[in-house]
Image (cartoon, rainbow, N blue to C red):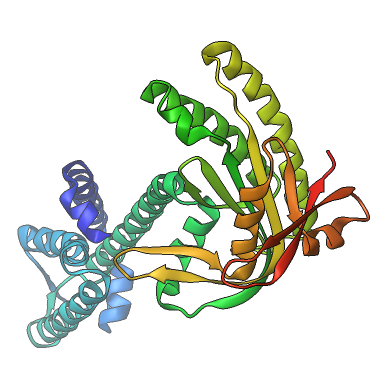
Length: 350
């Protein structure tokens, strides 16, 4: 982060101006004798002893040097090296002050340069922290436009998550799909395609997030939402159902709007399943996707694929977990991906 301050001319210029003003203030206070008593105490000599003060120009040079040098070191070398070099510099300066005080009775200021160094380092570290927060928020805002903010926040706080092994979590997964949209793309202008998708996804994503869902990915005209990852969600089955009901209600309004404007038909199919899945990062350090995997995810996708437009289809597991609050109609069975076993399909009565 120190490179950002160093390479930003306006910030660096302001830093140097303030540093010079601090150094000049310390020099004035030194001339006024504000630090004399502390210097006398630290240098272990009596105020009655005769000591020759440094020439004005040399004293100003010392104070200026210690007020500017530590901050520049941190900017150039980083926090750790900058602090180490500053400590080494002060060891040499301490030896110099002690030698000239005891051997030549020359009064070399100690408190003013020490204050200058301390203020310089605190300012650089504080400035660096503020720039770090600013940059982090900027990255999070940009990152969050392409990645779910919850996931972005987790990855920013835990960058090593890409290397970690997967874990198992109980989640609810939803897939949505705009029926016949691929064919529609061939019939209407490209700009209208994007406008419709933005309109629909804007509403659907807001509903999912408002109900505690995390947007896992956009796949063309389809949307994948997860409840329970990366952060736990209480009653994730009910919240997914509520989100689906709101989505279909909103799609009814959007369908009427775009039917009037472009004479297109919009229907949304929704499939939902609750199950234990594998959570982790797939891909590599260069390109990765933080997502959920497993048979439970595949079943949610299959439920969406067979669900009629304008309907909500759920698995048996989800139906049993929320049937005390909602009504369902059995539609039949579907084969699960990679197996010969059948899965029951239920339609939620809206």
